[in-house]
Image (cartoon, rainbow, N blue to C red; front, side):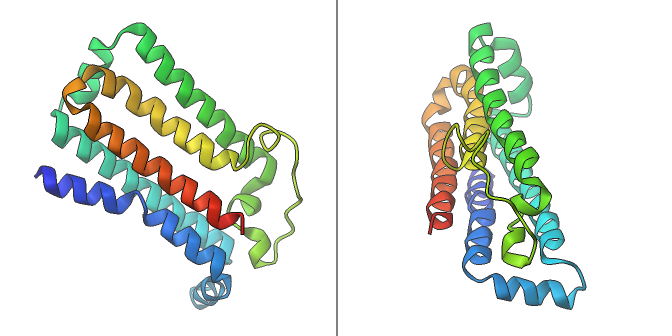
Length: 182
């Protein structure tokens, strides 16, 4: 069962990044797909992206439960040092602040590549783009590390397995940011 959980997670993590890379480099193909289903490409992208995030989240929970047991999240909450929870919470909150800043600043059309599909998206230099490059991807990575940190600290026997998940996931965000820089 553990191998299945690993395979599912390690396939779910890069799934949206491969999809976004395809959309970034071949927007006309996606426009054609959206036209066939009679939906604007931005709306279809948002729906597909949400579905992929649900698959990622379910794969992550399945992986954690398979690796650490059905009580893993409760056990982490109960056994983690308060400062461990605080640090994880701060990472998560910082990440979500960047993500919400991107959504607020760019809006629906900006987040979902609307400029590639005829939507007007203004160029933004204010928050959160004045904090770091690619704030949505950095924010997502921070959120992942914020969620993983307490689990890693409580379940130290699986520290390196969880570290590998975090590094792999962050590498996918880094890859997306490199692709979107060109």
